[in-house]
Image (cartoon, rainbow, N blue to C red; front, side, top):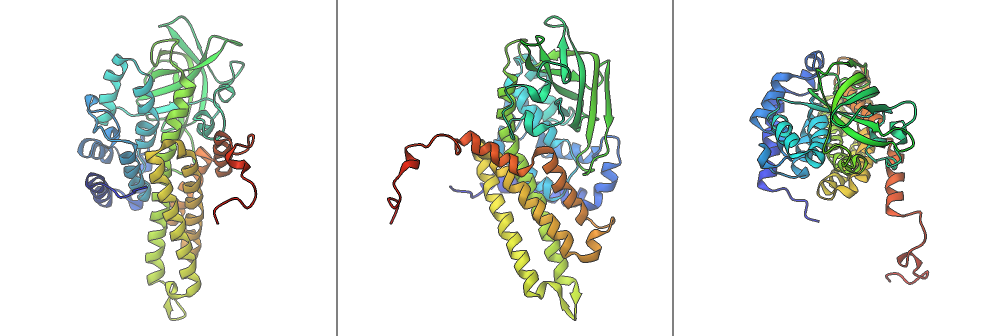
Length: 401
């Protein structure tokens, strides 16, 4: 596979890296996460208005750039490198593709241009608190058990078509406290004919209560969303959209994009660690000159590059997104842990940025993993543990010689 980047893709990466070097980076995180939004609104306007970041993968008819998931993944790799707190992942990788896939022409025309220009952010509110399950990354999402299964729990939609009211609660909603629009997964029809459907809920809807939660990774703000007799509009023609299939399809693409972001996180931690061991001296010489340290850094470099290759492939072929995500999350966890270790005592301090990389890696695995379940479900979907196929029944010794 040719993994060379085009001139346009190189320019996207360069422009974004330059902008984040001036206005973002780990040093700007404390001020950004302390805002009501959980990110820097001025920087978000620059990213949206100047670079068109939220609309990279949206069609030109909605003001987007008309690019593919590959360009969005490259952009997210740079935001991951800088640990940028932003609504990009929740809005552009999770919510916007669902609106584009399921929305009516009027809904797409009303919402997608505002997402493209950055004036509207969106969040995906899923009951059960497990994004990975609802998106079909760690299990089959078609039975609806992740959303309450139509019994007690989850979020219920009541009322006639066009007059839907939502009741229930969703926990751990990424950027849910500040998003201008919520895409809420709710059950309709009552048990046992219940099925899952997506609804549009404005951020200022009556009966909607949003509470920002304390998260392990403060650059990934999470919220609890409560709905009490909240009016909602069905996404797409009421009663016709297949929400679970759309969630699974969006989940595979989002996994590829998140894998690229995790690679950026791992690469950023590794780069800072290499720079540190070049200058930190022990026994009269730089720590990085010791062979044992060189070997550890070399192993980390190979791990990060392998994860990057998998993420770039998944951006072109989203079917491999969950496996690429597993590899990238594992690389991020190991690399950021080693970064703290190789920084020595300073790496454990609150003031140093090393712990932020470690928390991003751990928080992402909690939200979108764990790694072993991502791999297990990918193996199930590929039929690796099913009946033997003709290709697998080749007699012993009949392979390539």
